[in-house]
Length: 109
Image 1 (tube, rainbow, N blue to C red):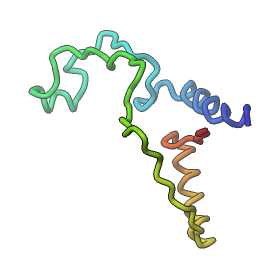
Image 2: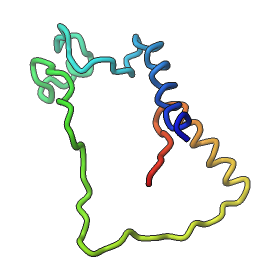
Image 3: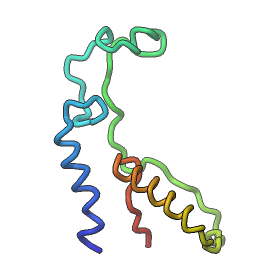
């Protein structure tokens, strides 16, 4: 399980390194010399965007949290079976999302 858990991250890192010129790949959180005039969408809506682009928000230790009610337990729902054709379609869609980087394997305790 150890190498399997790290494999998707390594594959994504290699993919990102190859596509650094793609506008969808973030390689840094600092903006170097970008002006508001260089982004077409920003020019269309000048009242929404600040004059200077400040970059991405700072990295936070905790991005989100779920408040739990004391003395409660998680809701347990029984697993259900899928029809073979439905399962095949589900796996295909999940693989497509994983390949695009929108989903990744989860190894919850």
